[in-house]
Every structure is written in structure tokens, then in C-alpha cells.
Image 1: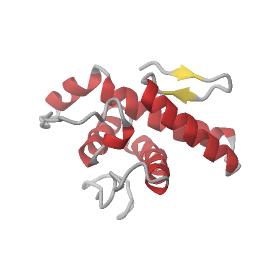
Image 2: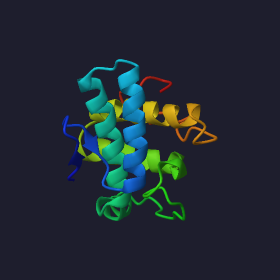
Image 3: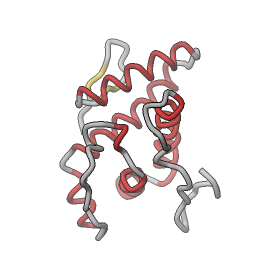
Length: 143
């Protein structure tokens, strides 16, 4: 999975709409004095989510996991259309292709991004509301 990088080496989604949201979020992270490494990790998680939803891995992964692929949203293009199932697909893919601990780190970055969108009234509801970890994952009881 390839990503675009800024001059500071921060990852950016390939999709223009998603990239603009991440760039706005980066400004707020800078204003909050978040260190470069924190911004990198958060933004990498969001970029990987974006690339996963719009990339070639998703259909094969859903088929491999016998998950329904019904999706009439624009989640691959617009982060404000991301729903719970998109996050679940992404986290399951992270666990399958990386590890549960990596998935937890990605979860935290993605969660902060959607917190930003909800607080900025770009979204009415957080797509990660009431997500519960599956059995055998290292996630705490409430994410």
C-alpha cells in the first residue's frame, strides 16, 4: 500500500477529499502541540484506512473472511460517510495482516480523527460509537 508524503514526511491519503480532511486535522494537531511522531502515527492510521477502503485489498479480504460486502456509501471517497462496518473491516484487516496490537494503535489514531470530525460538526455521529472488541483481542473492554 503506497501513500503520499508531505515535505515533513507525514502520510496523506491519495483521495483529494480525504487528503483535505487530514490536512485540516493536521493543523489542529499542530495547534495542540502534538509531536511529529504522534501526528505521523495518527495520520498513517487514517491514510491506511482511506487506502484500504478505496483500494484493491478490500474485496478480497471480505471474501476471504466471508464478510458481506454490501456497501452503497461513499466511504472510500469521503470520510464523513464512514460507518461502523468500515471501521470493523479495517480493524479486522489490520489484525489479519499485521497484529492485534498494531490494530489497537491504528484504532486509536482513527478514533481521534473521527472525534475531530464529530467535534467539528462534519459528522452527526461517531462511526466507532459502541464498538466492542471481539473475544481474544488485546483491546480493553471499552475502546
